[in-house]
Image (tube, rainbow, N blue to C red; front, side, top):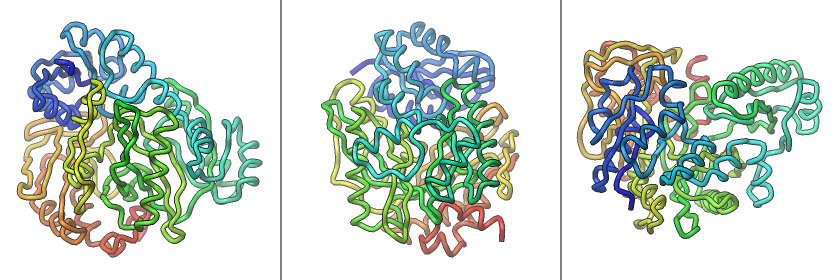
Length: 448
């Protein structure tokens, strides 16, 4: 095991990784931008290095600066968290070329899964179910119309590179397709310009009423790939997750078994190592699924898998990166739900930077808070406005929902707008209470 780990991230995920690194007796090294100097993660590390100004391109996305910080601090491993450089194959390779341990999958696996078209084709070869769609980038709107006629409407139009629902949109006819294509192309070009990569566009058959369900996998040091259960990520705004739960209330045992088996196949097909997720779209009526994409990193929502399995996934990542054997329990039990608390208004979900004047967290059995901020901290407009993750556990779903309601009621954040009131509204929603929701739930709530 390496003796020191540089955490190449910020906020709550940096705090989360630092916690496990120090618990394992390793030295935790933080990097931070000028805008983040007062955030908790900076003081939680054993050593902290100022990386650069607030602009992420000159700090957290600056590969040269991150590697220089690793050299200055004699770091022996780099954990990228999620976002920023976590799924950058070039950065992963540079880390390895410097003789450091990369706490993530092999660069080739990142590259192969980073392009959604290439990933689709690899999954087809591996025998993983994939929705009807395009096998290569769609160069223009006219070709998109031809492909949509072959696939059949409705279709989903999205960028081949990038995540977080960038440029994604559904089209139900030719006019809608041309508009969706133009939107996706602009978004893809912006993302490629900022992060690198191909601004290609792909089309897939759109599954109406679908749920977004992902399987947590671990690729072990000996080459074995294991699945640790699934998470339902269907509560989304702008195609971005805000609530996740495990197990999924929309997945029956037979479907769950097939999804976990397919996720293992997907990981084996790319020689996966470390923590990752295989994302799927589920038709809850037909109880069937198709591959969506693979995230080659630790997920934001990993804590709820930890709560039902008893595992520390960051610890498993570090063990695997060091070539050591991972450890496992008896499998998932109980039910866990994560609520992503953002500095945004609860109606339109628009960012709301500002200073936190009051921060009072709930405490008690079955409650976990992964926070990136504390009372007195300032939320700046430079980064994703995620403040914290409220995670609750119960013996079953009703118990978890009851605990969530009580926790949200006493969680107080003042000084800026946050989306806590939305979660109260969500818990009163009949679809969510019954577990029958899909990815359009938030849109329906806001349209009513």
